[in-house]
Structure formats: structure tokens, C-alpha cells
Image 1 (cartoon, rainbow, N blue to C red):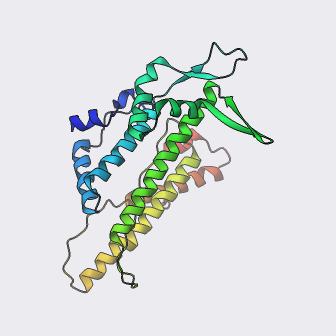
Image 2: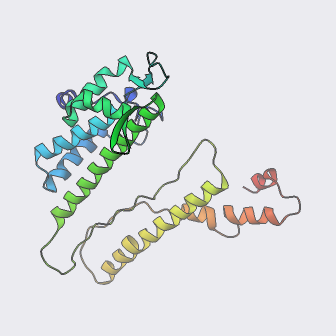
Length: 266
């Protein structure tokens, strides 16, 4: 909701340093982000997250996004060319971070631009240059997000925990489906994608195909689970004698095998 976006100080995606670097801001997969948000909110409610806790998590996410908008510049007034200052355009972001994380913004800025060093029994404060301050910003953002993720997993596990010692249900999450496509794709990347697709097919085989076949055999009533089957993708890569790997092997055996000859075989 728009009022929550304002309350949580959520920056625009195209103006957020964490989300705008890919320059892919318009979804092309037909997924409605508003609908996904409502589904997530309902799922958290089902898992026993109270509204206040859900809002706290949203504030943490927004704080991480605002941390990504902190820009540090060299301190031109520093005599020994050390130290950094916050860019004036980042004033709103540091204020949002302090408000969302409920810490003093000046203390947060000091923590990001300095570090303490112990020498003997004494402590000294060393100012960080702009590159070091940026690294500290990134480290804090990653640490905060990681802690939040671990907390959500812990809360979900608590919600599905049963008192019985007998193992009953489990949740399996597999996030390896889909090709990674880059501007330049090497043979190594093809192998990585092939391995991922093979693992996905193994998962499909044992969790969906065989299980549902057993249901049919036992005449158990259930709702058929439709899932994307990537077998055709695997056939494209590994089928003999016309799969990509077989054709590559063939070219390697030829005395004068080359890219043009391989492309002709495709």
C-alpha cells in the first residue's frame, strides 16, 4: 500500500543502489508484484507472524535498501588525505536508516566512516577513506539482511514444529531451476547450467513423478501437481547422437573441427 511505502521510507527501485544496477526494473515474466506481496503477507500470517512483527521485517528490508543509497566521498578538508564524508544527496537515506533501524543516525555514520584500533592498552580511532567506508556500508547491509533471513527461517521452523518425536512433515526448497544467461556465455557456464538442470530433473523425478505414480497405483485421491518438466532441455544437451555435448565431442575428434563446422551441425 502507498501509505506503507511512505511510512517504511521505501526508495524507488530505479533510485535504489541495490536494485538499479542490473537496469532490469520492468518484469517480463507476467508476475504481478502487488499480488505476490499480498500472497507473502497472507503466508506470513498463516505462519503466525503478527502484524507488528511483519512490519518490523519490512522496515529492516527498507533500511537495507536505504543503506545501499549511502554514497561516501573523500574528505577534501582532511590534511593527511584520509577520511571520508557522506555525500549531501545521501542525507535522506542516512536519516531513513537511523529511523528504520532505531539508531542514532550520527552514531551510524560514525560507525561506517571510522574504525577502532587497539595498540597496547589504548584504543585509537582511525578514519576510513571513501572506498573503505563503502565496504563497511556493504558489509553492514549484508549482515543485517542475513540476520533477518535467518530470523524468518527460525520463525517458520518454530511455527511448523510439532511436539511429537515422530518425524511427520517437511518442507523442501530447491532453487536451482533455470538457466543463467550472461552477455558472454562460456562452455563452463553451459556445464553449470547442465548440472543444475540435471539436479532439478532428479528432484522432479523423485518428488513429483514417482510419488504421483505411486498415488495412481494405490488409487489415492489427490490433486495433481503441475510442475515444469525440463526433460526436453536435458535432451537438447545430452541426447545422443544429436545433443550439444555429442556434437561438441564430434568436432573435437575431427582433425580440423571448428566453430563454423559445429554451427553447421546445429
